[in-house]
Length: 125
Image 1 (tube, one colour):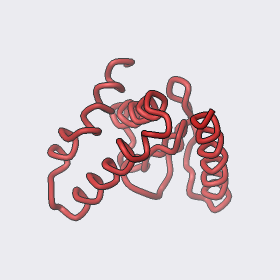
Image 2 (cartoon, rainbow, N blue to C red):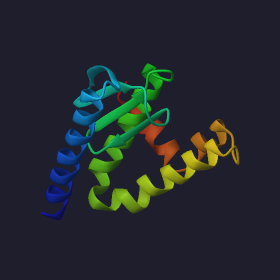
Image 3 (cartoon, rainbow, N blue to C red):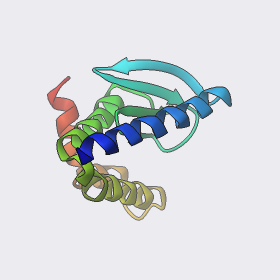
Image 4 (cartoon, rainbow, N blue to C red):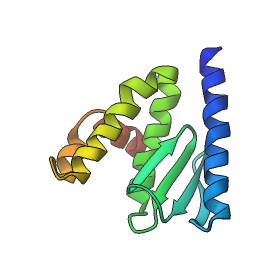
């Protein structure tokens, strides 16, 4: 029950977020990957997910990145509400460390939960 409520809230907030991006001209393309919507935008990091929705920055958009981000969608489905503390927060910390150049991109990708997201995404390609 709690997972359903959280997924519904995530979905609603994500739709509002991407609607605002669309209205303000930040969405280049909307497509699908498997059963998720993919928004190619000019904001944010290389990629991030909000529940079932995937955002990729147009500069970094690639099949590999989209598959990796879909791996984060699958993590969320598998872990339910635990995805926030177990994968989302660590993933944001890794992204921040990469942005601050404390670690390299490859070092970040090798860390869990990024390595698990890549593995999950690669499994379905």
